[in-house]
Length: 179
Image (cartoon, rainbow, N blue to C red; front, side):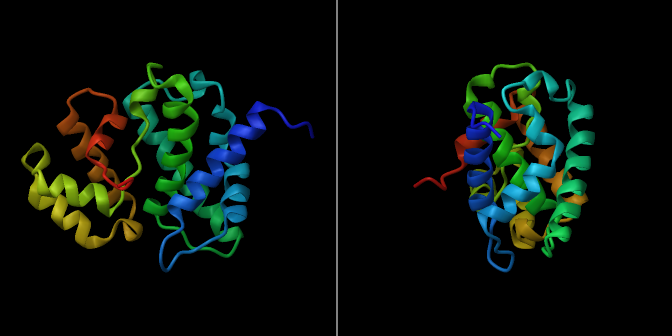
């Protein structure tokens, strides 16, 4: 196998996604995350955002399929991933290869779900984002890493409602985890 830019992007992006997703009570090595992502269909999107679903509904449906696949691949590696953990792995991966990879203005990039964690949920609660402070507090209490598919999708829906057609990645202006 030759080492090319696609390999380089995949290794970096799967490293970043694995490190960001490995959480207390669900720790896994980067090699496990890379192995899981190697099996996933999202790996094919590197340097080709045209392969992303081209509508909000199609993206959400495909994301649900990707999450289920990631959960299945994690199980093959003896790990139990929730929908939220699999979503964060996917979202960080896509963030690094599409949003931060220079394709953020691609028409389908605006549908990419942002990575969600307690830092973002707490901030959305404290600013009463979209006048839904109670919703954000309740979501944070559940603990993002334990969310099921429905709980995850409710959070994404509320972010969409509050952003009013802005790209979903713009919600991260409220994420202060880098500080």
